[in-house]
Length: 437
Ligand code: UGA
Image (cartoon, rainbow, N blue to C red; front, side, top):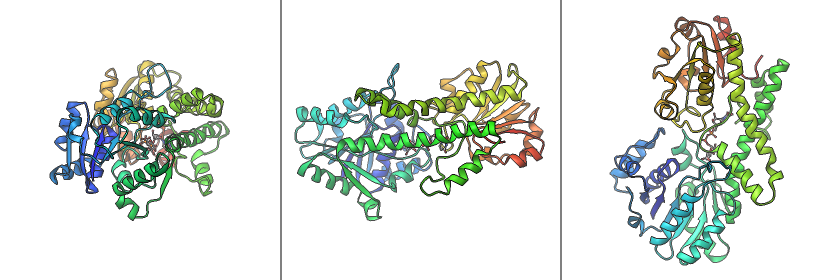
């Protein structure tokens, strides 16, 4: 098939490369010339394992091109919308201006009988509004919603081998035809047995935000219990293991720590509450506000541990911050808990030296006031306190004996609960985890 992908950020670049890998002819479109230039050269503008190889192979096989000229996508059978829906400044609601602009642009060039497929995360009701826009502009073109569940760091695998496919389609014959077009796009995944759920547009939109809201709630649940564990002298990690064995609960996303960040979970739960308010059902999702509050409090807890460990003040103390990206295998620092902790400690007068295998460039752009060291050993030099905030493998595998030779003092906060407390204590460290005795 001929496929276009409008918006070549995280979601769009990965989707375009993956569609080419599946054998489709793909035109990636974006208004940002520097992005298009980089992608055309086979380089991603962000760190994602496996993506550069996928881009290069698509380009070399002649199946993948990137352009700023939407007219080059006029022959596409399916047009994906993969633009961002960031939080609106000063509000919890999602900013839909990029989605509307994408629809308008595609409607201007799409051939009759083609299909526009939304992948962006949008508030429920958005697709219905877009269908109306389309009726005015291009009545022969259809709209479907096909949410994406990829995780940063695993984006290529998640796109090529999704754990489910959800198609939101319009009613009647048109919806049946649109679902068949999506079946052709995802033929390989369907042949491999990937479950496919066909719904109406509103359900598909809600599936996506509900999934992210559930994951956020799960993390804040375990973090809230970790606060109790901390004062009661219990161990949240053992507790999570124990309740996680119950298949109804499951162990995944039950890791207590500094909490969730990134470009999705935080803004999605806020946009979900904003939409619920608009629909007159704000109280139904009021608990998501508490999920957000618990999550923000985790960052504060880490800062409080730091102050306590250093005897009541971090002023003029040297603190090594291990990790600035919002999670490992990503250079994304959007709403990063790690960076937030670093900034708060700096604000309290600490000399913060932050390190990260991939995220320093992005962090530096947002917070140039912090000191960054690319090498973990350089960051550790003479530290009064080490704070492990993003669980990259190289920090998980730090050797407590060697580390102690570099730092000035023996204080460590394991804000992701990934180190072995007994081992670190045995080697002379004052170890503090989150919700661990
Ligand atoms: C999330 C969802 O997991 C994807 O399914 C979804 O497609 C994506 O958002 C999106 O909407 O685009 P992602 O933002 O890449 O993916 O990150 P996650 O792996 O979900 O992690 C989110 C945050 O939760 C990270 O900061 C991570 O450190 C934190 N986390 C995760 C915890 O604090 N504890 C856990 O047990 C798990």
